Amino acid sequence: MTIRSMGFIAALALVGAACGTKEAAGPLEPTGPTGRVRFVNLITDPARLPLNAILESVPFGVNLGYGGTTPSSLPSPATANYSAILAGDRTLVLQKTADPTVTVATLTFTIVQDDDHSVYATGGTGGGAITGFMTTDPTPAPGAGQVAVRIVNMSPTGGALDFFVTAPNADLSTATPTASNVAYHGESQYVNIAAGTYQIRAVPAGTAPASRSASVVINFTPPATPTPFPAGGARTIVAGDAAAGGSPLRAFLLPDR
Image (cartoon, rainbow, N blue to C red; front, side, top):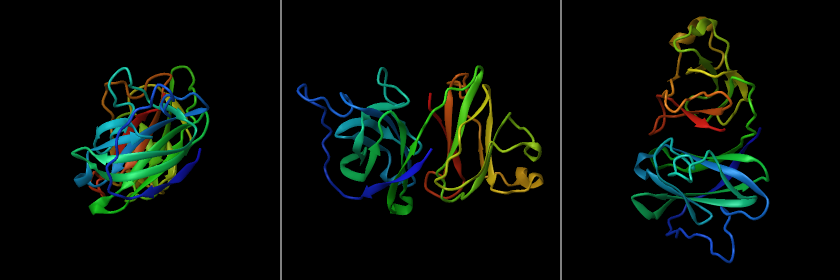
């Protein structure tokens, strides 16, 4: 797995959302080599949110607040974890939902054939710069009765963290980290765990076992519906800053399969 920095261009412009024609299929109606993509909004500037996502001039997501993701938020039958798209260089334009003439950010990235990708928009605290990052998501098929889980750390405030995915209220002093020393912009390997209900906690990397319970900086138990950790599934746990930046840190659960 790799995590790659994407280009970022800030501008104010009117961007029309246009669909492909019958004569030529668009990038979201691919006829050549394809990959798949999803977008995750981690922009920490409430003044510029929510936003609409325009992928290659095609509407890709609407009214996405902090932590919002698409295409999983699209109405049926468009709902999916990822959307197929032609391989090659692609552009995602983010527009302010309340005023689509305002371009919040333009992110450029490269889709690799047969790979799944997550595109994250981050930063923006206090009107600051917005940047993009992309992960490649080689989602594995877990064993029977198991779910594959990995961590992506998108919290600049948190720094390097140890993550624990445990039974609810398990004793952290005796727990084994699910992922250790995950730096900002870092990601762990997928690991298989038994399907079930879990609590997600994080502490600063290297925290002594006896001090973990008093050092928790992320504490997140996903809602029971839809099933957060189903057998045969795969999930990415994303660590992020608060909605306006800084602390308290938050976590989000993304369905990969």
